[in-house]
Image (tube, rainbow, N blue to C red):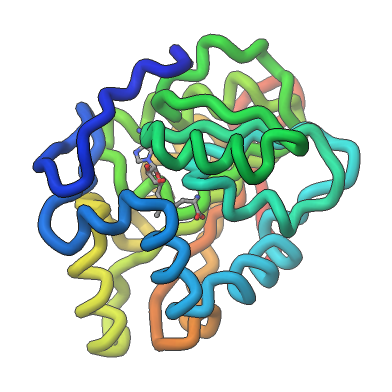
Amino acid sequence: MQAERARPTAPGQADRAEGTGQVNTGVRALLRLPRAYRLMQWFLGTRRARERVIAEHFRPVEGSSVLDLGCGPGSLLPALPPLRYVGIDLEPGYIEQARRDFGDRGEFHAGSAADLEAFAPESFDLVMANALLHHLDDATATRMIGGAHRVLRPGGRLVTLDNAWVPGQPWIARTLIGWDRGQHVRTPEGYRALVEPLFGPVRAVVRQDLLRIPYTLVILEAVKAPGGAAAPGILRT
Ligand SMILES: C[S@@+](CC[C@H](N)C(=O)[O-])C[C@H]1O[C@@H](n2cnc3c(N)ncnc32)[C@H](O)[C@@H]1O
């Protein structure tokens, strides 16, 4: 990761970071403002959802080392136990806000989650990517997953959560997902296809019960095999 490499643009300005399928125009530009982003999260009930996802899927261990890719304004940090936390986000405004709010509890870097060269191999127990993959095209996502695999200790886990297209999902979920800033929403199989070449078989857990409204989320949990080789891994629901 090259810190501070992100290209800041003003809210409202049309932009798409390289390799990042994120629309930041029109109303969606507002979401680049940390306060607007937090308001939207409150409306959807993401705080409670986040606590459940942390407890049931991310499962961070006290005292461990955790890398949070696409950390936004540090939304996950308040719900984590005491541990070594490093957050990365492409959006400098989010990183500034995160440093103001949680600078005493973690380290925050502005930069791409696909560029993790600054971190030593096997230096994290858990890599979290909460609502990131659906912002990344396949090439960028593949680089991100390769970087995550490199920085994970053997036995360490990569856990991702994203919205997803599934057959028969509620119309409200389909509509809201269609409005998402991320332009690379995939099916559960599409997300698995990104992770499995490096980590081995991954089972996806689809959940529609986490937010206040019907919404489809898929969680992948991948384990780095001892020795670093891909092996059947994973998963608990
Ligand atoms: C939907 S938000 C999720 C934020 C946070 N993980 C949370 O749970 O609140 C997606 C985040 O990914 C960031 N992002 C998009 N592309 C990125 C990239 N290539 N590298 C790092 N962060 C990226 C965006 O700036 C945004 O903060």
